[in-house]
Image (cartoon, rainbow, N blue to C red):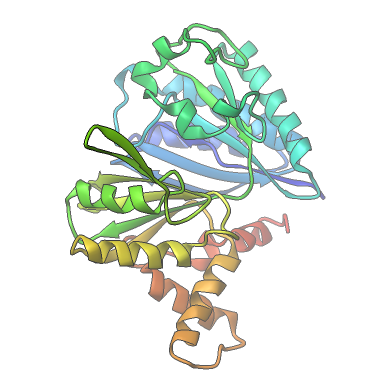
Length: 340
């Protein structure tokens, strides 16, 4: 059975009634299972993960975007997370029995419907992008909601679907097809955002640019397939390095944790724990847990639960907020929903 996943990010993390209204719009569609809801008041953002048959997932995504446009007024929205609309981004992720090309076709189908029926400007990104400079989400989102009206009028930034003028109440949205992504935030034992930025700039693939003697010098980042920013997270009263791992097979949570630990030492801070947004493939935890046994020169146990427990300890996944493997590991969520 083909399984398509959708992980929409909504610009609301404080009004539970609005969040429930969007969740119910998803639950009301037959053929999909809502796997997880992640709410952040400080970011004023909610990430929902659902999966099912491709047609049903596309219908559920449309209904969720429609409901978000009804209940969220972007003219009143504020939060630390970058955003351009009520539904900031809505990726489709092929999990089983469906190709990326097919997911791209579904993304276009969804984008056209959102643009036409809801009158919301839509940009396609990642594998569905229609131009290289529109592939990366940060590039589309640059300028954020406040700068989007002007950006849409500049060359190269006409929306793929929907109106070519900005819609202030609902904003714009980004729809596309991508691989499994791990959203992973590391908390620091400091409130200084500058230190989180120091780490983010050096670890992310794009690196950073500094000016020396009037010359701009580009420094590449330490890890590939990684995006990162630093911010202050009021939910936990600390600075965080907020990251998207675009390919966990190339850059895993373990690699990110170890690199951040080394960079944190350069600015005299330590890692206080980590926060997973949404779901994580089992492989990420098995790698991290196995690493702890190898570090101790101990035999890796056959019991996967022991390995996963070691990973949770190493990555500090219980220190910031609760982490339940049955609820936060992608494969387990799919199994419980009868989709795997």
